Length: 251
Image 1 (spheres, rainbow, N blue to C red):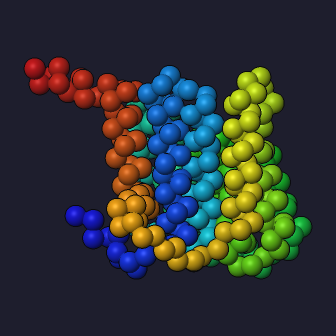
Image 2 (spheres, one colour):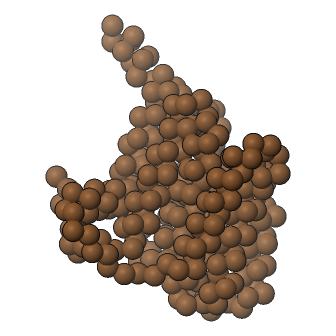
Image 3 (cartoon, one colour):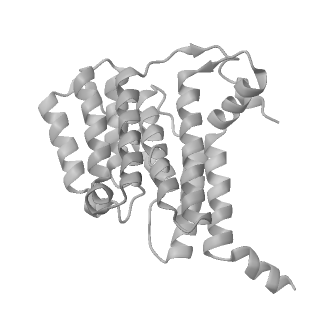
């Protein structure tokens, strides 16, 4: 059933750990959004998920776009349009766009001034882009930082760009929020992202527990399916009452 967990190798690597952490915090975020009346504490923890996914998408060197990511992204975008009556491009299509761009453009061959100009443009347009694209253009900023990290570009610049990207993304919460505990969580998440950009590198990680290792591998190597199916179920069940309508219709 889970043959893909050993598709690449039989051991955990640092990619798997990052994706596992992203999956866990994503689920926490979605519990806070869908199930606990938009709980601000859970959602603050969940702010870690998307930046980690974007970062690792930029970091890896394989930018092949799998058909599944496009199909799933189009379906979820359609579900969002149906449930919210608004065109909101899903994060999976953003991942595909990032892969397409990075397969054709090398950020590490650009100068710091050029890179800062690109990131500055992303920051300036963030207030607009976030209304029609999942996480706005910030996904491209995180992926750009991931690619710079992977290619050994100036490490201090790379880490600071990760931190500044997150703080700019969260500025509305930081400026307007008066709950000190939520703000503390936000700043802890920002520090974790900073340390990730600073210290991350590919390495094999040995874990003696087979159950723990396979749990992490399943979350990592089936992350696309985990995201798609649980978001689809939550949207159809809790936002559109789709399954309730079907049940009533069949009755």
